[in-house]
Amino acid sequence: MQSNRREFIVGSVVGLVSAAFLPHVAYAAEELSETDPSAVALGYRADATKVDKVKFPKYATGQVCANCQFYQGSASTRTAACPLFNGKTVEGAGWCNGYVKKA
Image (cartoon, rainbow, N blue to C red; front, side, top):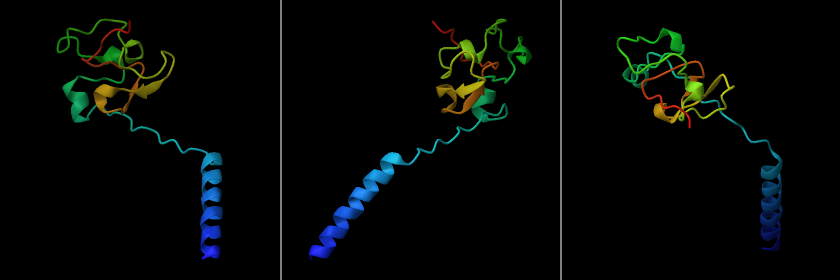
């Protein structure tokens, strides 16, 4: 009985210590494709200069994902997650019809 208790305590301490010092693994979010159904629905383009201005008259020159309030990276980040696309990454130079200028 004493042996099992000692093994449990030692195992618990080793587990806690190793969990504290092991690096956390970060998984890259999936990159949004222009053919993804949600991207098609919102008119996403990885390059904002290629937005169909007739189909999306809301688009104005200078609007890009990097200066949209939904872009979850800094303005200088090439790609970042976007909650409009379930956290998939979008190009900072991209655009979609969900664009809202960052305040």
